Image 1 (cartoon, rainbow, N blue to C red):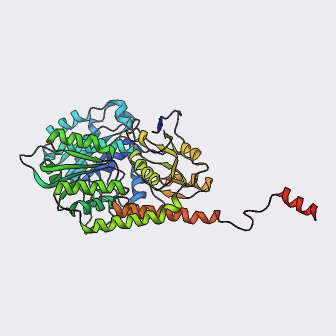
Image 2: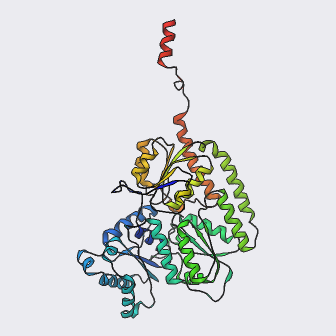
Image 3: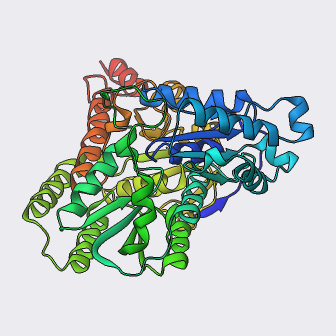
Length: 453
């Protein structure tokens, strides 16, 4: 059992974590025809917007209420009303989703009350769904903001249904799943004859496609109609411990039972998923998943020679840290350093001596002497300084192409992840190959031989 060490430094050096508002805005990007809005200064939104554009290399719809010094002191009601009306008139979205920032949370804006006031005096907003979530960026981290936003969507959109459809399945993916992960999970669920509704669904909006027509809102994702119909599903599948509160909230509103899978990367984790889906649907596991399971077993046999005994340092959000750490430990690595961003019940179960809630400076110090460093793109300089291989995982990943299409879930995603990391270790092994100088006799021995002659 790992010891969890909380942040003790007065300031973050080379930060690892991202804020709650950004996590909430990221979740809202998985809703169809949506315009996410940050209630705060333009700078708060600009930094988040640049980060998402660099990661996905796509146009990201994200607006701001543009608070300044005066409106922050006097209150942001006028800014929120103007922002909603401007977005409604120009973009005509189905959903305007608002998240707070540290600036407006410190002031104490009562946005829930203001939205009721605005809706009461602006009848033209009758066809526009408004959702608000409180996400102060001085508390929690990225995955907390994502989970809070999904809970807000459940509260605003989902209602109990008079009957259940045994083939419908609600899926609540965590923020550590990429659009390609969601696509893979959808393929797995549909292979059992089930009809999944993802909330949110990044595979529809951020999968890097070119639309036929330009739209200023999100292009794809979960529709309001599908989200409102989630009360008729037979069960809920939540991926990541971060989604447990959302699944529980959905159960409280609709009575739908749920199952939480803490990870879908690894052999045993996917075995459990397929058995659960088989029991739920009443159908046997399709043959192609048996084939992929066999391929993953073979990949693990091939790879374990290069993973065994390797010391690894990982810095990531808790659910991503848990998925990667557990996979690498299963194949023989030692997690020598684990750094994360926020609290999670999973941290103390990680196969490591300790888990630190800290920053990239903590990760770099802990990674000294390790064989591999894993974190997002901001860790590349630390890996260079340490002279060890670097595997990019998480968000942001701005110095590589195809971040949205990296798949780490399912048998196939697990196999590809093992090959990618294994190839890094293989490439680095060349630095440690034996040469004629590797076992050169010590100078004392050479001197003794010379004197004897």
